[in-house]
Each structure stands twice: as C-alpha cells, then as structure tokens.
Amino acid sequence: MHAGLKSIIIYHTRFGNTERIAKSIEMGLKEASGRQDVVCINVTDVMAVIDSIKEYDLICVGAPTERFTAPKPIKQFLRKLESINLSEKYGFAFDTKVESRLAGSAAKFIEKELTSQGLQLMAARRSAIVYPVKEMGSITGARLKEGEDKTFEQVGLELGTACMRIDRNVLDSEQ
Image (tube, rainbow, N blue to C red; front, side):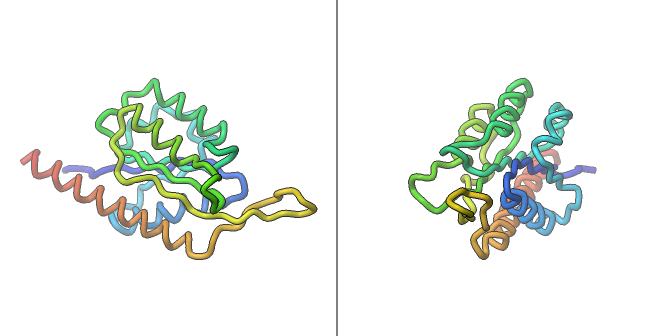
C-alpha cells in the first residue's frame, strides 16, 4: 500500500503571526489530503531531529521578514539542511511581512535556498501581511491583516491538491 506524500511545515515566529499562518497551511493540507499526519513544528524544535526531514516529501518553510530577509534561526536551519539529500523532494516558502515594496522578503531567501538544495517548488512563495504595533515609538508586536488566515488555509488546500495529483502520478507509474 502506498503511504502518500508526507508534509512538514517548519516555521519561526516572533509575535505569533507566522505560527498562525503555518497552522492555516496545515489545516488546508489536512483538508485537501484527508491526512491528519501533517507536521507543523517550530524551527527550534526541529533542529534536534534535522535528519528526520528526509522522511517528508513536501517541506514548507516560513518566517517573519526581518531586516529585509529571513531571521537567523531559519538561516541556521537551512544551512543544516545542506547535509541532507533533498533531491526529489518538494518545497514551499512563506513569510509574514509589512506591506511595503521596501520590506524585503524572508520567503524569497527561503525559496532560493530550497531550490539551491535541489527541492522542486510545489508553488511560488507567498507572503502574509502584518501591521506593526508600536508603543512609545518602538515596535512591540505585529497584527496579522484580516483574512490572511483564510488565505493561507486556501494555500494549504492548493498544496494538498498538488500533493494528491503527484501521489496519483506516482501510483500510476508504479502499476
């Protein structure tokens, strides 16, 4: 019996928004695939079991955009991934960022790293918009733009549908 494509979502979050987006993707993936074993995990928790990443077919990575790029924990994770053969795996990059053409993109950095490590992109990178929360002139948090949870649940549905299509093609070629 063919087990189907296994998916993992790895994220870093500062104010909780990227985690919310990761969990929305997880919900969509589960709904589309009918599988409940989609893993959604903080990057700090996955570092100790980095070798287990090779067990997954779809590797989604997301982070908040900080200083125009991905934050240090995600960069460290992606560097550690270099020691694992990820050819024939699929990837997807996402981020949270402020709505400005000058904001940069963690997802752009993540996507470039995933493809340089041999992953095929399941879909183009996506960004969820956040609004900074300021107190006394300093950024103390961020608020997710209304509707982004639903948007990224739809992204998860699209990724899950793509996984199902790939899985069917694999099954057809095995027969």
